[in-house]
Amino acid sequence: MSILKCENLVLGYEGTKIVENLSFSLEAGEYLYILGENGSGKSTLMKTILGLKNPMSGSITFGDGLKSNEIGYLPQQTIVQRDFPAAVKEIVMSGFLNNLGFRPFYSKKEKKTADEIMKKLEIKDLANRCYRELSGGQQQRVLLARALCATQKLLVLDEPVSGLDPMATKEMYDLINDLNKEGVTIIMVSHDMQAAVTYASKILHVSDKPEYFESVDKYINSEIGNSFVTTMGGNEND
Image (tube, rainbow, N blue to C red; front, side):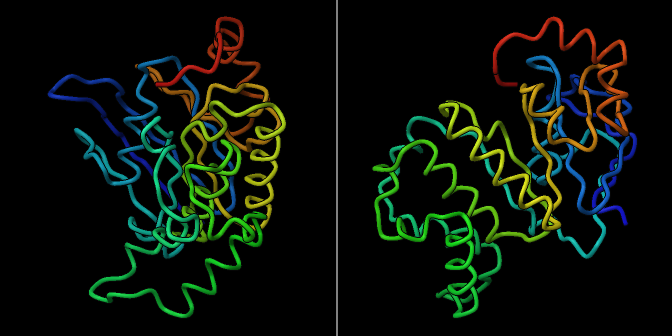
């Protein structure tokens, strides 16, 4: 069953088109890597999927019972956000905010779910620590836990290993891969080709003429994939 379907999307800003004729669908449990050059429209697509921006034309529909406010999102962090003076548990619990409605407090079920997620991501012992005192890898685990509080179906991750050391990078990739194996659908925006080859089930290459690949092998052997692998340098952001 398709959990996400994009049809004939046109994306842009202030009347200027960045991406045209983008169509793809994602099945529940799949792992999609979104690749492309800087400024190609990856972040614009991500914001559109999250409902933070409207497409210029075309449509996005959700399936498998998913609602637009039930997507877990792990954004790139700014320097200011890394220094946020709040307890880890408070940040993790904030993933439930879209579900609160007019309730002033979190429910017992939500508190239990947050505890279970923190335990799964091995940050339960950090629950009362101040977020800004944590290492980069620990902070990313906290943000991943917050995203999981928002959903058990679809995670959208924007360069989640940016700035992490090699060990923390591998640990984060392994955590995300484990979640995918448990049934969580993953959309990853990244420049990391090695990770894409290792973990992705499908690849979307965003450009003025976007292309969608049903397998990693097809992408690598395509002209656009081969060119991107050859010319790509560093882990820069869209």
